[in-house]
Image (cartoon, rainbow, N blue to C red; front, side, top):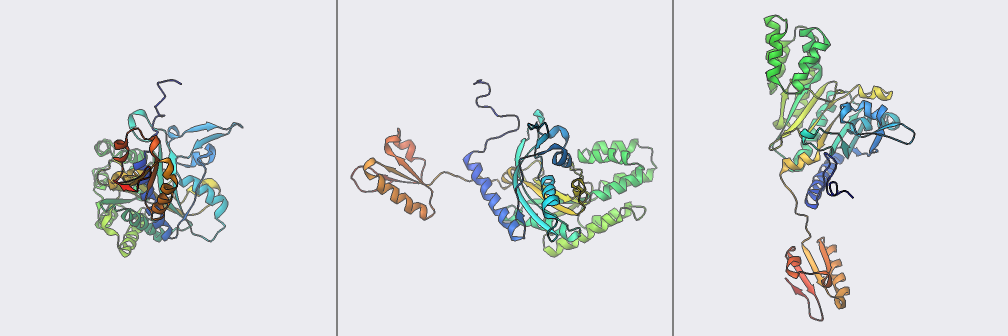
Amino acid sequence: MSRLFMFEKPLGMRDTLPDLYESKNLVRSKMEQEMKNWGYQFISTPTLEYYETVGAASAILNRQLFKLLDKQGHGLVLRPDMTAPIARVAASRLLHEDLPIRLAYSENVFRAQQREGGRPAEFEQIGVECIGDGTISADGEIIALMTSSLKKIGLDNFQISIGHIGFVRDLFTQIVGTKERANALTQFLYEKNYVGYREHVESLSLSSIDKARLLDFLKLQGGPEVIEEALLLLEDDKGKEAILQLKQLWDIIVDYGEVANIKFDLTLVSHMSYYTGILFEVYADQVGFPIGNGGRYDLLFEKFGKQTAATGFALTLDRLIEATGEIIDSKPEYCILFSDERRQEAFQLAREYRAAGKKVVLQDINGVKNIDACTGQFEDVTFLVGSKGRVGQ
């Protein structure tokens, strides 16, 4: 074995040590229970999918896909997200059920990263998909469920920024005239390069009024007042439907009582190209990237031969742990050191402790080289050694 690779891992892959593992497990279980309480059923899909179906439908950049070939020469990918695989399952197995379908998941996904990025290539997403409901009520439910799930894990300092990709596309196309020129503006928003956006706007052959509209667009961030400001930028009815949807969404979130963590950001766009309407990102203190995102993707199912509306969200588990700032100490609290002649007694005592919900280590004293180092790891140590009675440390 090459010493160079003996302890190394492939780029972007990480080990999960006990404390982090237990912390993730606790967060996952709390969120899963909340999702179940809202009527969402959990589903699992294969780690490997066909490139021509899920790989092509995922909206993840081709260079970020982990690609393989099976023995028949078919192109495969490690699933890069969970929305596309769930769309595949729903289109083939579940759409005959009474709609809408509410599904949830907690699975690892895989995206190849550039060396300079420093991001994981394998990470766990937990999220939900509401399939078959095209109402704004469904969008409101998704956002309210995400808010409720974050609060269940003790996260209060977070912000959900909500936009509408339809409004961005309609406004840009209305002003610059073509989809290609609109896409150039959208790319600056995706990169959050607002300086570049302003410079690009100034370079366009547009009237001063239209340039002012494009620059005022960057100010569309805040509360419900943003809705009226957005309407003033539109010249005709095209694009107004998106704004009216956001107004309806705000009313729904108000009724849920979850407006404290919500703001509008109509400059929001996403790298996930299948979003068609309302979309959002979630941010938390101390985390430099969004901890999750979601939105409506009403056209994705066409890639699997079906037509149905859908919306959902995905949260990144590692970033949730970073946001909560809490790592569990997973070490067992109790240890029973025993000698051969008192082994049965030690085993019985351990059963009693474990039945009471305590984490207990049984340790044959003959296997311990340093008693002090061993016992120092535990809050309570019981010695069952020789013929003497029980001694607690």
